[in-house]
Length: 292
Ligand SMILES: Cc1cc2nc3c(=O)[nH]c(=O)nc-3n(C[C@H](O)[C@H](O)[C@H](O)COP(=O)(O)OP(=O)(O)OC[C@H]3O[C@@H](n4cnc5c(N)ncnc54)[C@H](O)[C@@H]3O)c2cc1C
Image (cartoon, rainbow, N blue to C red; front, side, top):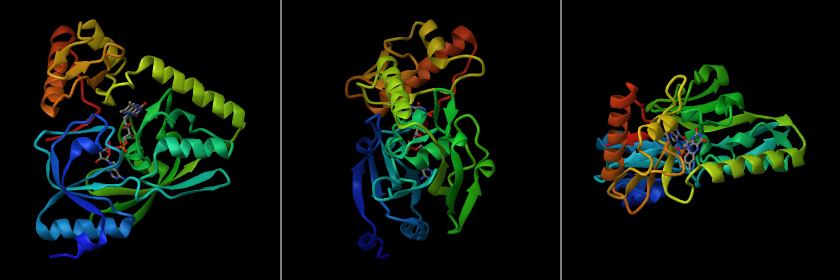
């Protein structure tokens, strides 16, 4: 048996509801919390040798696990991997850094360009994978490079244009792991940056149901339309399955209203897709990653 359990921080039979912002999900056989690329490599070697499947997560803010959980290893790149430095207008950061922390560091150093990301509750790694964006800006506008570990153990630096960023997607698939990235910003005025961040925060709080657990926007924006508007027009605001509900504040958000199970959430997502498809002929594609 590998000495992985002596070297890397881990938990066995840990409920994934404790590691996702939707607050649903059954147990993972293991959840590993590596400190660096080397430890990630070792966990993957262990999984390969023991025939365990594995998955990477960050803050779990765009991922839903089933009530059965995950019969394998969840590798959580989060607060054991969160070093960063600010060098002139470049922030070099580990994948586990929260975007909010990096946006605050940018502000403190009078660097502009990252204000849009301050309210996205994900890690830098998850945001790079998803090309997360808000208010007309996306990660691709600020990423200079990304250091990627492939599952065969090779570390490669990708330039922004090599990342093939698109709408909520990038080149990162399940054989690639974001280790760190460089964020290129511009010198700006600290009080203007602060004011912009506050303005966007107020927008979010007034429009989004942040008082309930969720995974943010449940569906991708269909070309030329808004998922939330279609769902609202289909009469689904407030629609419930068990403890899951279509938010009354913002129909684009499925929320864990009252101790929902993953099954409640997933059934509600299917009902919403079917109803919108029947009414408007548009099949909504989930933005949130569903792991069964
Ligand atoms: C209230 C709320 C508001 C939100 N607002 C926005 C918004 O405005 N804009 C937006 O784009 N998103 C938004 N989101 C969704 C989410 O925060 C983003 O998609 C975020 O980038 C996900 O980061 P994460 O660390 O939580 O990733 P996770 O949810 O943990 O993972 C997402 C995907 O990335 C993979 N992954 C994570 N880390 C790594 C890594 N280091 N290497 C390789 N793969 C990895 C996972 O396997 C998974 O496929 C919101 C979510 C919530 C709950």
